[in-house]
Image 1 (tube, rainbow, N blue to C red):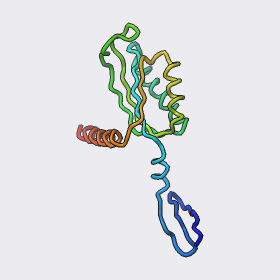
Image 2: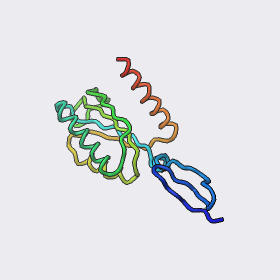
Image 3: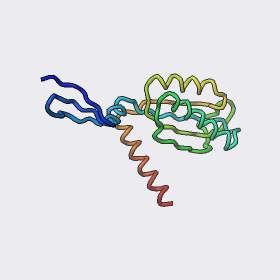
Image 4: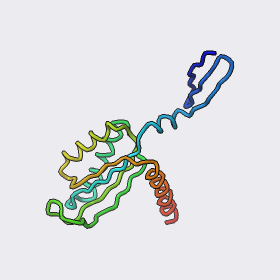
Length: 148
């Protein structure tokens, strides 16, 4: 009995001549193939709020151009650094969580290195436990925002 792959809308079916055997949600299949990443970067404190938001938007645009989807964005604001970096003791912290391909990371980090507004950055892939924790934290944070 030959089996073929059939597709309709967002679903993929494994079909035989007589019946549909298995239904797979295509969006879930694609998302499961992508890695989950989190990047934190520190911007120089001499920037105005507009300039800081512009820098964050630039990095978000790089991710979106390269096929990533941004799942969470947090602006942690101006914070004191543990040690001076480039003779600065404070910096604007920003966090981006996104799903994407591994090739996106090299392009993003190249842009971080080229941009003089960035003091430090760290990008890492979330394992399944860290991803579950991040999802839970997003849910708690959204509930806090709704209450206020």
